[in-house]
Every structure is written in C-alpha cells, then in structure tokens.
Length: 171
Image (cartoon, rainbow, N blue to C red; front, side, top):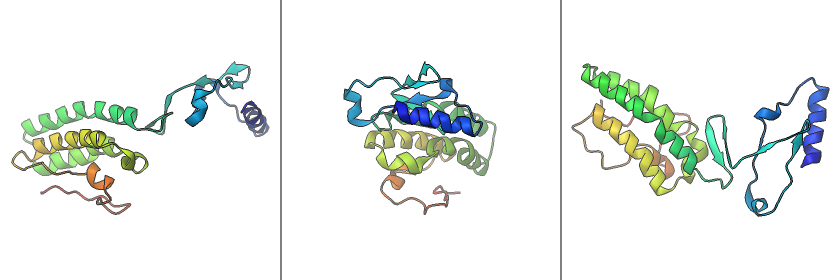
C-alpha cells in the first residue's frame, strides 16, 4: 500500500497538487482487519486509521453496515419536527406544513438513500419510518399511520420510479 501512496504523491506533485495528510484517512475493510498491517505514511506522517468516516454526508463503517449512518440521521430531525409543531401552532396551513416537511425534514431522512436504503435492517427502517410518521401526525393528526410511508416501500422496490419524487400524503 505504501508503494501506491508514494506513487500517488509523486503524480500529485507533478501536476502541482498537494495531499493534506490531516484530511487523509485509511479504513481497512474485510479480512485484513484481523491482520496487523503497518500504518501508511504520507509526507513523513502516518495516515490516521479509522473504523468509520463521513464521505459526502454518508457515514461508512469498516463492517459496511449502516448502523452509525442511521443513528446520525435519526439525531437530526428532532429540531426540525419541533419547528414543524411551532408552525402548526402558529396556524400554518396543511400545504405549508407539508411543504416544510418535504423541503426540510424529508431530505435529511432520504439523503443518498439509493446508496444505503436497500441494506437497512428492519429495525433501522422502522426507526426512520417512525420519524416520518411523527411528522405526518403533526400535519394530518386525523389519519391512521399504521402502514409504511417511504423507506420500507423503497426497501421492497415499491417506491417512486428513479428520478421522481411523489408525495404520498393526502392534501
């Protein structure tokens, strides 16, 4: 691996690019986890070895499971749902509340979902569904939310066609 990193540094230097060792991470995936592997060095400094990292807003772990990513997602909507409740108390209309949900809450829950949604456990999927159901209870308190809304449908291939967004809520 060190040979490949040295070659990368050489090519980067040739085109006038510098690699920042403070922003560079190494993650070992698979059977290599059980073997002692020497640290890779970049510009005389060892590259930090991590078990998880964030890449374009998606948390990836060395076991290639989505538990940490889902936990991060679930930690974000609380303040947004609080604001949704405040909008409801202030007399915002159903359409405005639904618009707020679709623009502020839903993107957090579905960001990069084509990458990870098909690999969720049932418990993870249900956790994400519960956030969406809480939001729908705020917007449409009179409806029954015993079925799935988004994530479970995508998980089983019954979601919107790729590239489209449909709202499955009554207006």
